[in-house]
Picture 1 (cartoon, rainbow over the protein chains, first blue to last red):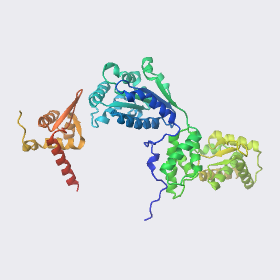
Picture 2: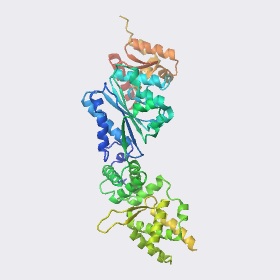
Picture 3: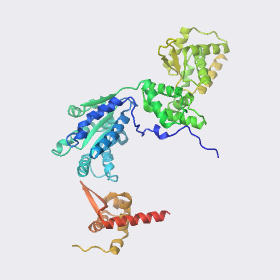
Length: 394
Length: 94
């Protein structure tokens, strides 16, 4: 029986649950989060903290909070404080406060019953458990919008003002509310809003270079050495960038591309593996988009596809694309269109979402336009275009 | 001081053995859940739990209306029972 070969060293490093030891390009946010909790760490019973983390999908909100959770728990243990970081995705519990609180209680009592009492009673029970066991909790409410949408102001108010009903008792629960933007908070009434909005950390979209760094870091942890070329990382970063700077998407894409490479028994993850992976995640090539292109736009795109097929590159220059287009025109016995015209064709292809373009940084040889074909497997594209062009010719 | 039960009295009830086995495996449970898992009524379950608690083998904690039962980790009888249950399960698996 042939031995199973894999280019992966440790797939779990690409799993959504993996918390990296170092957070690239989020150091300042991590430091700020630690600053916010500095006093709570020193005097946990005197002050509970509330922090909001915002940012688009894949900007590192969850992993930032989880990394912080691991670090602060370790710090607290060194200081002899019994602190637990509990991360709950509110959407998984349909934004239901009772279910969210039940999850927290079940951290301490895994078989705690799910029926027979209200969310208010459960909150009291949770505080009783924390008081009896002398535990402090940092409760991270991920996808906080879901809780706000489902429960409204009252639930959030209960969570943020619970200390008022237990005067002179230690503060037990700090909150980290994780959400995409502050719109959800605006739905809350003013008194609830005021209890939340003091400490806000906003995570901006990752740049392409930052995504390259993040993906490169994961590659070194997850794949065997020299199995993922720079071109593949660059293409994956480009796609992740175009998906809103979504690092999580890029990491998942890398994993999927690795699976394609393994399935084809390749020694490296090629850019084509990434394209296949992308097209398996999102239905990207609509045949109607291709069919709606003009004849010369199709010829131009066929030329681009052929360079990618031959070179296994992540991107090609406009100059190379023009040359390939000239060859295709010769094949179809057509006169080539001008550079300006091709530039317009490229804009159309970009608008439709078939290619992506980027102007390279000024170097020794000046600026040039780079063309990416991130989403469509080349062979599939070439086949489809050839069929369309032959039909047109006939 | 209340007279302690003899070992044969404790072990004479199939339900009590089942409760002990369940709590050894699961850790802690509330009365309704124990009754549900054993398919017996609440009162019968409560009665057996009280016997085992009076004997010092079980303990419970109250959270509002919820009573969670578990083995009394300070009781040498509970520890001995836990060892017995685990050894039994282990031997059956071999």
